[in-house]
Length: 567
Image 1 (cartoon, rainbow, N blue to C red):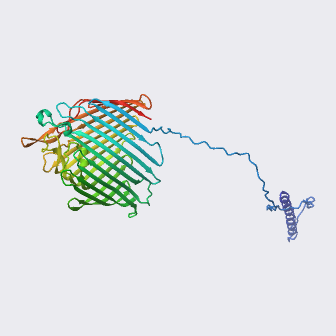
Image 2 (tube, rainbow, N blue to C red):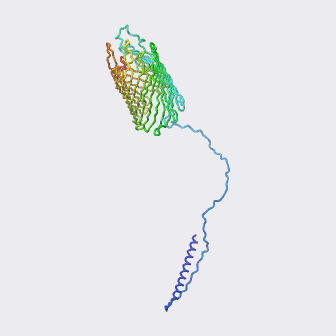
Image 3 (tube, helix red, strand yellow):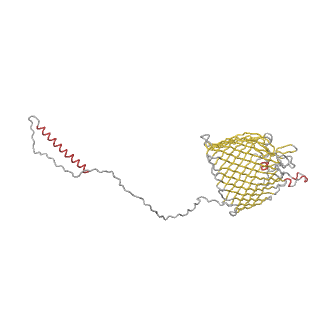
């Protein structure tokens, strides 16, 4: 390329010299051809000549930059390659966090306290399992102590229960079968106020309740939105007392719901219904029996809209006794997560009939008469508004304000037909109740646990002067402190406000006040070894004599000590 360019340049220079010579020739001829007498004189010699051109012998050529891909053929020869790799077993992975605590199948505790108070408790349970669990619980506690100036106050409580669960991929079946035997005495009178001829024997003031019950619960715990959700509870119980009064109860509570898409903006929509049936059969020894039944059917619709959760339904009840009647009540609940996982507000509106039974009365007050008048209570409505907060991982609190309107609600009063005024019956009245409920929990790992709960009540009675035997407030505080799993401390503070009771003097009823009372308890357990511990409990440390029921004082200071062993 360079030689070619030089050749071009040289040719251009030769051509330039040729043009210059021709131009000079034409100039000379033009001068000679001019007419007139003008003369041109040339001095010196001038011989024009053209130098020979130097020729380049190389021939210019252009290089082609396009390359042709060579064609070739190949083939793959198969050959087995022997490798020295050998398969070795993989070691199981180890947990990086804390290992699972070792479980023990059995627990036993024995103790004895003043007032001749023996104590025994035993647990047996199956160890960890993915498919089943079961256990047995046995407990006995009794006291044969005396209370100054009052009749024989001995009592005992025995419990035997068997519980178990079966786990499937999407559901769980729970079962609990138990038997309880509670014995107490109607000691609420002073023997020195009666002549010896009228004083009863201990066996004449005894009361004994036997309770056998079976609970079954089948529910779903893994749910996809497109699947049906269900929860079924079945409970049967039989109870009787020392005077051959009996009661059978069959209670069925269930709900079913399905996914829905009625409103596009709503999420987690479910449509379903609750179905309940409460059946009671009371058999009195001296009176005719009584059969009653309550059927509840409540269709509902629930959904989420942003931070708001709503469940709305109508409760349709059929109450059957000697007659049958139908009732309708609203059933609405709302929850607003103002700050998710930190602060929420809730609102509820509901109502309905419920049955007062021999079982419910005896569990609240064991000193009732045998043929106590059971019946229905109509909660015309109950509304409550509340808020709760998780201040931190350790602290939670909850505040609820309730307003209830009751019709034919029971109140415990002294049975004036009893010889010693030591038994209770019930009177029914209509009243409104305002209830403020507060609670707070504090938990620091597994070391410190605190639980504070309190209730304050305001009643507006229709016929009765006061809500008999119902305190103005109640507060409880429990605390547990674990010191290196070696020393376990626990404490309980319980207080009830004052209440009013009706007292008859010379046929005239007067309202008497039961003073507010405080009960402080403290306990400590020392684990001498990992499997063995020694415990001691101090109850009613202030040694105060208080009355939960009229003419029934409590024990004063009492102590219970013993040991526990797990294996």
